[in-house]
Amino acid sequence: MNKYDIELDLTNRNSLSVLLKHIKKNSTVLEFGPANGRLTRYLKNELECSVYAVEIDEKAASNLEQFCEKLIVGDIESYAWVEKFKDIKFDTIVFADVLEHLYAPDKVLVQCKEFLKEEGNILVSLPNIAHNAIVMELLSDKFSYSQTGLLDNTHIRFFTNSSFLELAQSCGLFCSYEGGIYARASETEFGYAYENFEMGYVLQKREFGEVYQFLYALKKNPVDEKVSDFDAMYKKEKTLGIAKLYVDVGDGFCEENSIEIKNPQKKKSLEFDVSEFEGIKGLRFDPFDAMVCLELHTISLVFDDESTKNIVPVSHNSCYANLDVDYFLTDDSHYICVLDEEMQSCVKKVVIVCDYKHIGAKAVNEIERFSSSQSHELSEMKSSNGWKFILFVRKVKRFFNA
Image (cartoon, helix red, strand yellow):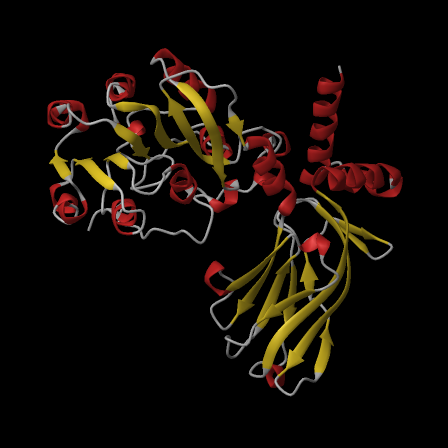
């Protein structure tokens, strides 16, 4: 099985679902590196395109021929396709996570211009080597290759947004669209948390720091205006936020047994359907995936017979509390609850009522303000990681203000 054998997902925003919006029905498409043909099949069967393809993996290619007008099995950089397709002009040429696997992607792009119709597109997706997770990897004195992901062990070339645009320009290509697929550092294969790095707060402010993949549409002729959704998507993803409820059914808290709610700060109460879980022994409520100041009112269990019972957390990891507001100096905030034995098998819903007082940067400012006012706590705090972080934030602020 090819390591890139992944099903085509059109229900969520991902690189292929975005690139597909740039491909018109009944068009002529040249697809480089189609792997298992997840995109190829859709182009042929759903968009009724005439698809031509170049694939290096013989086993993967054996499943592609039925969807292609012509299929070349071989290395892109052997350029056998140049002779085979010399009489064809394409509406769209697709490099979906392919250019990073080539030794000289610029030469390939220059060659592709000759096969592109005057109004045609070259569509590109590629990984961001400057993702915050990679920066954290370097700060940890690591650069660990893996089977797939940002540091796929078959990647030869690495790109940032500016370096790819410079490469495209050097090839005489003009960018008509740019965008990105986002992933927080903790959501990547590296799993790093910002709180574990002194520079974590600064990294979260980087413009493209959480862009996992860059997306581009390139043309052979100058464009009047480039469409960019970086700013809109970045702000949306950064302010969205996620609350999670982890359910312990005997194996501890894990991602497999978790439920998330996006944009929790906009809701009056958070309702988690836990009816699929049996024998619930404990709950862990993570109110936000960034620093947060939170007033927790109630955690209620709703049972099969519609009766309810309020429970109280047995622990939490806030740095301190004031007037019922908990201050979390971490992007992994949580409350933990333990369920009595008689409750464990009949809970169908967990309802949490809370007020999000401050989140993200505003939470940092509030934590700094409040901690500075508590003179009697300073002697204890000055030796803590939390206080060191606050001092670091102050230094960063002074630097930028200067």
